[in-house]
Structure formats: structure tokens, C-alpha cells
Image (cartoon, rainbow, N blue to C red; front, top):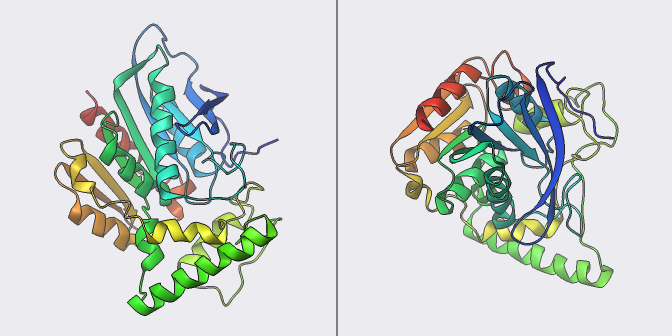
Length: 313
């Protein structure tokens, strides 16, 4: 049975659901809402995407638990090929598929009689921030976007690599496809241990120390989120610009939330510069990348609610 890193508030109800993306892959999700919500009225809804490699029981449940208390209908989900969702082989990642998962959530929410189809937003944490922006650039039903500790995985795939190193990387991954084809199963190497650890390795520094502090310890460890994807999944990110059309989200608004001390901050800064108005940035002081996954004392929920209320009137 799945365990959640946040305790469900007594005023909130959570219902497990299954639905399909447009590729016919079953997605496992949870719907959160206030127990006393009046279902005879139409309400604002938010689909929340997990950090890259994460599942619905981690960061998304923190956001859904809080936003449901404030009157929103919230959908969290496991990406296809991950967690309790369908898709074989396991741990496959794709920029188009992971962006599609956001739109599939909009599909589901829009079929609920108590959700207003004209007031559906997407909130993406870490890698899902990039996927939410990509989805919104092509799916006009997403009326507002919030990114939290945004990570653009297509930019990350080429980060600090020379043209020659990119060529070598493509060659390495292309040859890996032969190995996978011969074996009949793609290579998958998890990033985190199967059981939570007590201490972070001393030689681990930078953003990976932050990731390890969340995913590998009791703080955020989950058996369905051991990190990493099939090795050849990186090929698609090398060939796909998630945010090539970010300016086309306008005139729908975007809110970028980022920790002041996050080593990933430059991803949000870059996307913010490229995005068209209306756009907003909230830099949270004394906050790193993973603090915005689960630290309710630092996550600016009041600002998130105000943004949603102003954007989805």
C-alpha cells in the first residue's frame, strides 16, 4: 500500500482514481477536495505534477492537501510508466508523454460535473514544471500555470556539454539501444537506495545532495520513486525542446516559484525571461530546491491561492 509523506487534513477527502491519457495508458491518480464542498456548484481545479522521478504520494500530496483545504479540486497522479500507473517497460521517460500526462489530468477534471472547465490550472514541481509549461503551450484549456523549483529536463540534457560531447552522448545512447534490444529489456539504474538511509554521503554535494536528502531519507523516500529512468530515455530529451514555444502561453498567466538558494534557480530565471506577459516570479528566501517539495512553512500557499483566484475568476 502506498504511503504519503503528508498527513491528510481532517477537512479533506482523497479518492483514488484511474483514467487514461491519449495514448491509452492508464494513469493512477488521487482527487482531493474539502469534505464539505458543495458539488452542486462549479469549482476551480488544479492538476499537480510530481518532481521528475517522483510520485503522487510525495510533493504533490503536500500541495493537494493544502489547496483542497482552500476550496480547490486537486488532481495528483503518477506519470505513465511510474508508480501505480500503467506502461511497459517500467521507468520509461519521454518529454511528450510526460507533458501529455498533464493534459490527461485536465481531461479528467473537465468531466467532473462540479469542476468549471474554464478554471483549470496546472502546477508542476521540478521536472513537471517544464512539462506543465510545455502542456500549456499547446493545450489552451490550461488557463494558468504555476511552476515550483522548475527543472527543464530538455535543457538539462545538454547542460554544459560541448557539441562534441553531445555527439558522443548520442552515440553512447544509440549503442545502448542495441544492448537493450539484444536483452529484450531496457537498462534501468536507480539513483536512490531501496530502503531509506540515515546519513547523506559526505562526498555528495550540490543539487544531488538536495535530491538525496529528500528521496533517499525518511523525509521523502518512496518505493515507487527510486530515481532515474531507463538509460535511453535521455535520447528523446536531447531531441526535444520542452519550452521552445513558452511565449505562446500568453495571455494566460504563469507564476514561477523558486528557492533563493536553489542551485536549479537558473532554470526558472531562463524560462521567466523567455515567457511573455503576464508572468510573475516569487523567490522564496532561505529556501533551496527540495524545500519547496514538502516544507509547508516555506511553500507560499497564500501567494499561490491569490494567483489562482486572480487568474481564474
